Length: 393
Image (cartoon, rainbow, N blue to C red):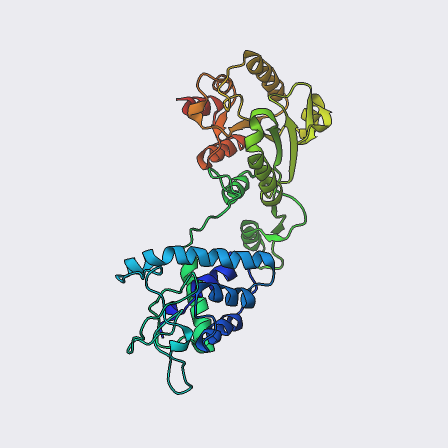
């Protein structure tokens, strides 16, 4: 028996997989055994009633099964035509009555048929049939009732085929230009290693020199391990044109705090440009004066600014440029290294406030290359003027 030729398998799997009805293989076998015994093979209505009686538990499920049957009857002539068979004219050629059907015996398999069990070798004489919707004659395997193992295989096989054909969509939470993994890798390059703490590591050179002086190894020379002493300050633009990039901002903060291996990570928020206050909460709560923040961060802190600088809307705002320039001059008096990450591509900066701000701030687009360059600036590896012109060209 071919598993894909089992009757009503498509409707049964649709009820299970697509509509979530709690049906098992036993429910499927009950319908098949009923058909083998001669029940509900006279017309379409009886067949639908049998399936509703066995498979449906509520009125809604009952209507669902009837709707699936209507769809099957509507698509059946096209399916038979595609398979090279002639679709029966149900209005002119009725099926034989149930009394003319061959009843299967325990030793003799029933003839080939899915919904009617008419014999393929002996064609009964058609008789007038009263129901309005007679069942069409379908091509099916010799036995209508499979073994339980075969039914299980058919259900599983149909489910696997349907899963392969079904288009798969994956909901991603990653910001595509820079993934979380790439962010963590970039943060780990932001290092200022300093030996500090209890001596636990072997100082090979000092130990060798001591052996040369004393001529014997009595005790090795130890030294403190290296620890990252980098203090990062994230200044993030919120609201307005930065709303589409809030998820990106959260990912930057999360990766810096959990995977950056930095000594401290302080996060402050502002809108458009820092005026008098910075905020510790993204909803612009817990305000703190800018002067106090700059006094606390320290001279060796690395400051990273995240803002579109007006490039998202494509506008040029001279007031924003002047206010940002005044704030950057104040920042330069407190820290040595600072950089700017812009979530908009660099080609969108032209003729906007971002293009003007990029002339006095090392600004980079949000990409793996841009973030690596920004980290290099925070480490003091790039000259600011060279970096600016390389990205503005």
